Length: 450
Image 1 (tube, rainbow, N blue to C red):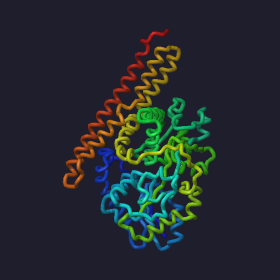
Image 2 (cartoon, rainbow, N blue to C red):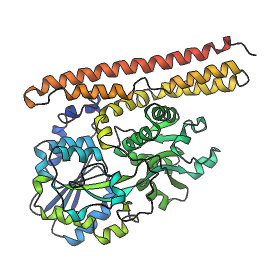
Image 3 (spheres, one colour):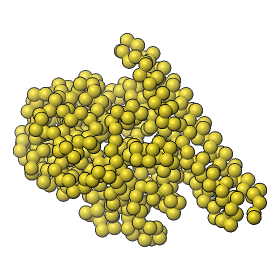
Image 4 (spheres, rainbow, N blue to C red):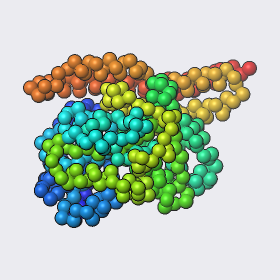
């Protein structure tokens, strides 16, 4: 069997102008996707898998399928979650047999759009895992799950005299300044779940305070979630939040790579679903059955796919954060937008302000009035000027806008205008906060020393 992997396309420039608008995203990728998918039509003896995973983790699964179905050609189409939604939202859905992803947002959208076939009852997950399954359980099969936590380079920490972190909140400490890397929710579905986990566990304001504080310590932002572990393993940075799948592979290869779970993050199931238009596809059914088979489940944590089997309860405990699909899907684009504006796009300014705050703490270490002012400045810098209620109001206003095709351009233009206004307003508020913070720090010399 010949397994062909279709490459990634650089879509950054395309999304820049309409990031975070779901229906805008659905309309901009047809050209590049058409070129790639022309070679991936689901023929009689072909299995086409759409996945958000990178190439390497899937190889053991493809190879096992190849042994059992040697006359079947497997095509694997790699896309990020939003690109996958675009592909399956159009006529190209007829080319896809199976969708494999850890993104509940992708699977939920496909289920809501009636793009997925109903699956047999015997494929249902165990009861203890169901609270962490976000899409409908009759439309997706959970084939395994991951936990998330921190990966670090032991040699790097030793070289820089850094303590080993025990949780994500530890990374807010200035001692880790410039030693951390992470991805963003717009670039990584698992990072999106980590961000929502922090907001769920600590609440909206405190959660964003933690995220902004950790963001101010970042040395760089990884373009993909698996890049975090790679950066750390290579010694370019010391620590990063990631899922166990990526960390475990490198941990097995290198003694200096270590990983610890963080119960602040939710458990993350891996889903497979069959496209409804291919409901009678024997190879799609065979592939799903293979993923649930004893041979694959038994070895799932030891190969490069590196997931916990669905009956492996060793990681589970009730302390792991649980998410509400209803809550996080409503604000998906807006939370991603806030992260981009508040952290990604202003990272240099955020870091400079955080550095100035800590220099001031050292300089005025014996000046109690100055230290109180510095504490107030720090609180303002790491406070998000947007409430959860405001986000809900924005989402409700979007819901009032009809999305029928006849008026698509008018409605999408109205939403684009609203997002542009929000982006401008939020940017101005955040920029003003940093400017005022730096100005107040410069004026600390006027504070009388007791």
